[in-house]
Amino acid sequence: AVMLGIQTDDKFRNINGLSMQLGCITYIVTDGKHGFSSASKLFYETYHLYKTSPEVFSRIFKEFNDKYM
Image (tube, rainbow, N blue to C red; front, top):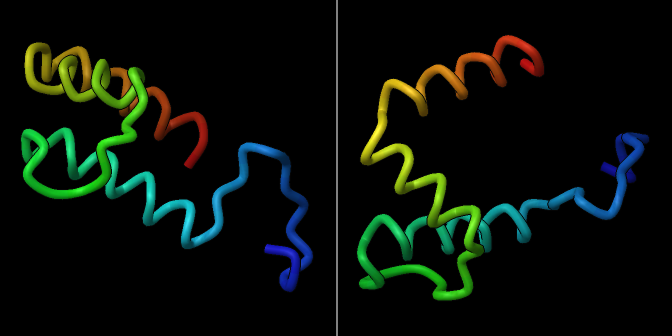
């Protein structure tokens, strides 16, 4: 981002940071068989919503996607 002149803040994730977060999600989805065990409560809650209320998850995802993508 710096090399491309993109302004960032403290929530910015570089490729390594994104890989680590993906590893945390992998841990949740595989019931702890793979990935990193340091997943946040938010990741657990998001996956739970995805599994138990896919229609609500899809609506929230669509609203986010429409607004920011």
